[in-house]
Length: 237
Figure 1 (cartoon, one colour):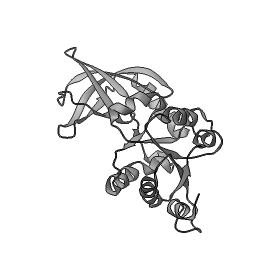
Figure 2: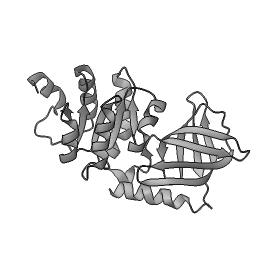
Figure 3: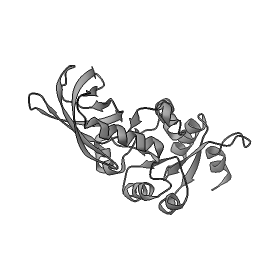
Figure 4: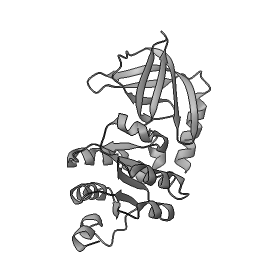
């Protein structure tokens, strides 16, 4: 690593030890400088990984990694998720849309940086997820994760959505489907180590402009406890 790159990705104060490390994988210099600057504001040290990313993720501990969606993404994500030390790593993807990320849903991508990387948007996403990276997990009761969601509404209409965050009480989702507040149905999904689960739910809020909506799990449906158990395990991990 040359001196200029080292300066860009290391903390500005050598005496202040970063409490977490994020691996920046196969990023070009402008992108990694933007990412490193934003992560550094929250005490997160950035480490550049290139051709040796797969092996280093098997042997070194990182709290998060940023990987560009593309031909090498599968190997990197698999290396992280199958590593004993990095199985709970926070996975950020760069590029593409939530639908593009569905190809990698088995790896449990937590959030996506959209290209071109713009500092305000990057900073906003890092701020929203930094508690998870820093392991202040008991304060972070919502887990950001992107996976495909299937819903069957009370009128038997089938809806496909993409998850944004999940909690023990409900989920926030993104979909272009016509959804109304108060609609009831059943949602099904799988999350990393959580096999597919089905839970009754009700639509609790809707943002038409953002194509997002929230669902609340039915308190009388005992199947929701499987989600709570998974979240507790995730936080303990």
